Amino acid sequence: MSHSFDPAPGLLSGIPCDGLLFDNDGVLVDSDEGVGLAWSRWARDRGLVPEDVVALVHGRRSADTVALLVPDPGQRAAALAEIDRLEVEAAATTAALPGARPLVDGLPRDRWAVVTSGVTALARARLAAAGLPAPDVLVTADDVSHGKPAPDGYLAAAAELGFAPQRTVVLEDSATGARAGAAAGATVIGVGERGLTTDARIVVRDLRGLVWREGVLDLSGAEVLRG
Image (cartoon, rainbow, N blue to C red; front, side, top):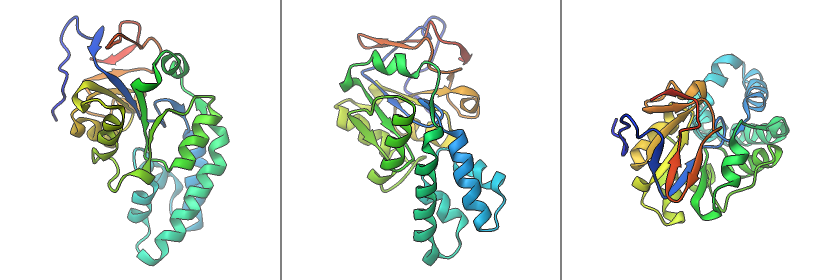
């Protein structure tokens, strides 16, 4: 997999970029509890193994997961509406991940976006529950024809911000999301333990210590797990 930035000694402290493109769940917010509650209930209602279903959902649009798990196309619309409702209801359990608030508060509004596999209502509900500001540029499952690992969402966010995707940094925790960012031509940074399952050359524990200033993302204060 190709990446636009090849880290070398001394460069981990600063990655030139015009803007930051964040995945939401697992990067800005911890929604794992709500995801587990909603998808487990949805799975049990269909005689599926909840643990197996929950393991499938990270980095995927709910529509794509439903298409994998509901064989009858005629039943998919109702199944999708149900899981979207259950996830919004469970959004109150969402919390901000470490470092998320200081990083986005320090970014100019025209320098960052959120690109998520969740639907718009869910993304906004989780950001609000976590006490994080909604970005001016929010690209959700409702806005793209092809979800991650297709690059559509990241390409759309970069275009709306007015930046070449090669001049952006994508922060992702899932393998599918990291592939989407790389396919868009962005530099990809993995986040958290799940980030270690991605092909990202740089993985940080969380967003603590990351600072963007004057066109450079400074990683010198972050805990780097790989890189």
